[in-house]
Every structure is written in structure tokens, then in C-alpha cells.
Image (cartoon, rainbow, N blue to C red; front, side):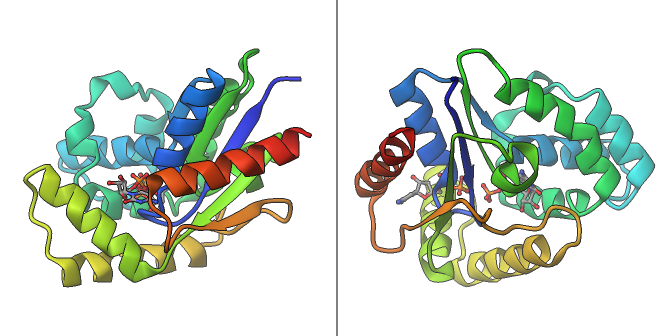
Length: 209
Ligand code: CDP
Ligand code: CDP
């Protein structure tokens, strides 16, 4: 059976890094599903439209190709916030689900990370990991990441962002951020990347049996 690894968690918990590392380790393709929501938001902003314009957001989601977007722009701080607004609209989520499920159904397997991979996109995934870390740790990580890219990185403002986005993502009715019942939670507050990867690898190996 193919190996499908589902990694979910809040902003800057390290889920993308873990999904990428696990994908490389097992030779799987990796999809960062947050980029899809970021790209829909980016398409609306580029056209001067409101982020809550559901019709335009669905149209952007249907024709979406990530190669049309500049990844640095998608990963900018304001785009995370904008993505979380478009992601709360159920028709936008519905328009993106087939693409994610087709990716996960590749014969060789796949690793996907996001908010609802274990709960909605791939409920039958072989392994589900819910990655967490304290808001303060996550804000510190994001500030370092942004500073490394030469972006403004005010810690207090980033902490505020992280908390606001967590609340919106967890509180929405459509595919809220939460651990699947059969997910293993990995708290990375006190783990560096290597330690978190080693712990994630153990979880995958245990599940593979
Ligand atoms: O990397 P970070 O966790 O900051 O953000 P992201 O994973 O790129 O996701 C940006 C936003 O997209 C999130 O705050 C969610 O609102 C939304 N998202 C979602 O709803 N479902 C997913 N599977 C992935 C992202
Ligand atoms: O995908 P997500 O937004 O959950 O987080 P990420 O992009 O994987 O990680 C956010 C930042 O935290 C990156 O700069 C990682 O290198 C860093 N990180 C870390 O310092 N320690 C960890 N255990 C995991 C990630």
C-alpha cells in the first residue's frame, strides 16, 4: 500500500519543514496545501477584489496553478492572514479538494501539510501527525524566518498575527484546524528541526509497523 503522510498544525509549528523532510526521506512528492489558499488570496488581491468575494475566489481556485505565482510573495506575512480569510469560505475549500486528493492518490504515495489533511482531505492517510508548539515559539520562528528574507519581523506583531490566525482557523465551521482522532500530536516547542524530524520519523515508522 502507498504511504500517505498527513501533517497538520497551526502557523509556524514546523509542519512544512517536517512534511518536506519526511517526503525527501521516503522519496514521496510533497504538497504544501497552505500555498493553494495563499495563491487564491493573491489572485484576488492582484485583481483588486475583496477577500470575501466568494464567487471570484472560487473561480480563482478552480483554475489554480501554483506555477503562476511567485513563491516568495505567497509566503509573505500578509498573505498568510489573507489566505485564512479565503480559507474560511466552504465553496473555496470545495473547489480545492479534488486537486489535493488527486495529489495524495499518486501511486507512489505523498506527504501533504495543512490544516485539514488528516480530517478532511485524506481521512484514510497511513500516518497523521498534528504538529504543535507554543504561540511564543512559533512567533519567534516566524520572526527569524522573515528577518532571514529581509522582511519586517516585529516579534510582538507576529505573535498577535499567529494568535489571530489560530483563532480564525480553529473557530471556523468549514474544516477547522484540529487534530484527527487518529493523529499523533507532536509538540515541537522544545525541539529543534533535527529533533522534531527524528520524532516524526519514529511516529511514521511505528505506524508503518
Ligand atoms: O505556514 P503557515 O502555517 O503560516 O500558513 P499556511 O499553511 O501557508 O496556511 C495559510 C492559511 O491557509 C492558514 O492560516 C489557513 O487558514 C489556510 N489553510 C487551510 O485552511 N487549510 C489548509 N489545508 C492549509 C491552509
Ligand atoms: O509550515 P509551518 O508554517 O508550520 O512551519 P515551517 O515553515 O516548517 O517552519 C517555520 C520556521 O520555523 C522555519 O524557518 C523553520 O526552519 C523553523 N523551525 C524551527 O526553527 N524549529 C522547528 N522545530 C521547526 C521549524
